[in-house]
Image 1 (cartoon, rainbow, N blue to C red):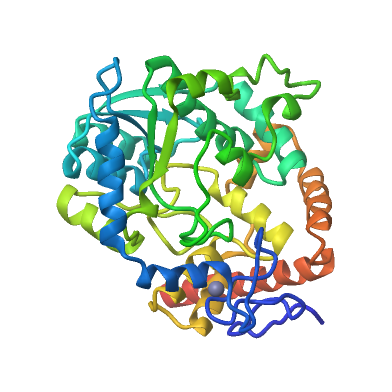
Image 2 (tube, rainbow, N blue to C red; image 1 turned 60 degrees about the vertical axis):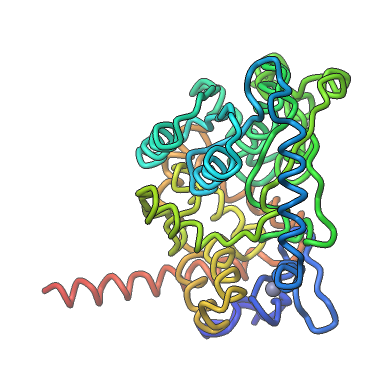
Length: 393
Ligand SMILES: [Zn+2]
C-alpha cells in the first residue's frame, strides 16, 4: 500500500522524501545528493558560508550604476503584490538604499480584502508612486479555465502577468532596472546560491507560466485577448539596457525575521491562508487554496509541505512534526474550489478528471493513492471537528 496512514511518517511510501526537510521527489526539478538531501537544503547550507558582505557591496554597486539614469526620474521598478516580500523590497530600496522606485502591480484580480489593505498600506507606508494593471473578470475566468488543462493549476494569468507587466512598464517609462525580492534558490529546486538563476524577461515563463500567450490562446481566448501578457520585443529591451536582479541573491534572506521586522517597525498585519498553517504568504490572494490543492492532486504535496520543509530547514521544527502538519493541510479540498468551479464553468467531475490527466503527466502517483490520502484527511478532519464540538458543549 503506497499511502501510509501513520501521520508522523511521509505520506506516500513510493516517493522519495528529502532526508532533511521532507520535500518529496515530485517537486519540479527535484534533485537529491548521495545522502538524499534536496537542492533547497543544500542551498540553505551554502547560505551560511557565503560572503554576504561582498555580495551586498556588489548590490550597492549595481544600484549605484542605475541611480538617476532614467529620463523618467525613477531609479528602478519594484514589482509588488502587497505581500510581505513587497514591503521588504520597498523598505530596502527606498529606506536603506535611498533610491526612487516606481512600484508596479499586476493584479490577478483575486485580491483578498486583507491583500488590498496590505497593498494600500505598502504604498502609504513607503510613500511610493505606483502603477497597476487589472485584467477584466471575464478574461481572468477564461484564463483560469484554460490554465487547468494547460499547466495543471488555476493561475497562468498571474504567473504570466507578474512576469510581463513590469517589463512593459520598464519600456513604457524607460526604466532599465527592475528589482525583485526573494531568490529562486530560497525554496525551490530551480537554483541554488552557487548556481543562481539569473533574471531576464523570460524568467517567469521558465519557472511558472510555461506558455507564452500565442501558445496559451484557444477558441475562447484569442491572442488579442491575451495581449496584456505579452512581453515587449527583445530588441526594445536591449536598446533600453533592461536589467533585473533579485535582492535575495545579494542579501541574507530570512522570511521569518523579515516578517517580524515589518510587524515591529512598520505595523505589518497577518491573516489566515487556506491550506496552510502559515499566515504571511499569499495573504493577498483568494486562490492559493486551489493552486496548492491542484499541486497535491498532481504531486502528492501542497503548501503545508512547502512551509514545513522551510521551517525544518530553519531548525524550527522536526521532520516528524512537519509530517503531521503537512498531512493536516495538503490533502484537504479548499472551500474556494466552489468559487473556482463557478467562475470557470467546470463541474467538480471535470475538475477532478483534468487533474487525473495532470497527475499522469507527473507520473508518480495513482488516482487510488491520492484518493486514500484525501479520504483519510477528510476522516481526520471530521473527527477533529467532532472533538471540538464536544469540547464546546
Ligand atoms: Zn530538503
